[in-house]
Image 1 (spheres, rainbow, N blue to C red):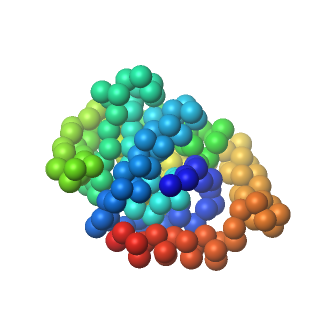
Image 2 (cartoon, rainbow, N blue to C red):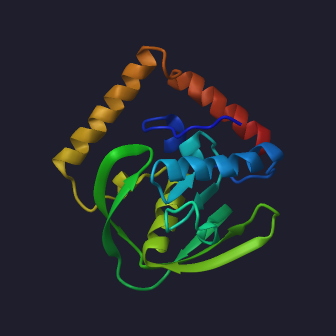
Length: 195
């Protein structure tokens, strides 16, 4: 499976992803590729729809270091429970919104449940930066981005977002990116395949 990080406003980033019923060999092969893309782009998390896959799963490694395999997580069909404590403000960025950063309030602690590659249930309670990553990636699966949760409107951030949208539409006009209709047709094909 040839995957790459998709940029906003790709339609897959704005949709609520569907639970997987079938995690086949092709998707299993996509997981190491997702980790590779994440590390190459200095990321700490990556949701399936950020690589054009409309499914409910994401990967993360709070260390951001490829050599620290013991800190890698994969959550398939995850559910989260926000922990107690006052929301904490912190700066976030996103691989689908390159070079855009803004402050976002997040719960300081979460419990996440889901499944691993073998279909076994997994559950973790995470705090601090790891909890922030979980909430950021989980939002992607519901069609939200960190900019939807921004603490305040900052003109420079909104200008950068407008420029990214303009470039995306120009790339579509130039034939470098398929039209929204073509992208949505591919999303539907993928959904019919595994959900």
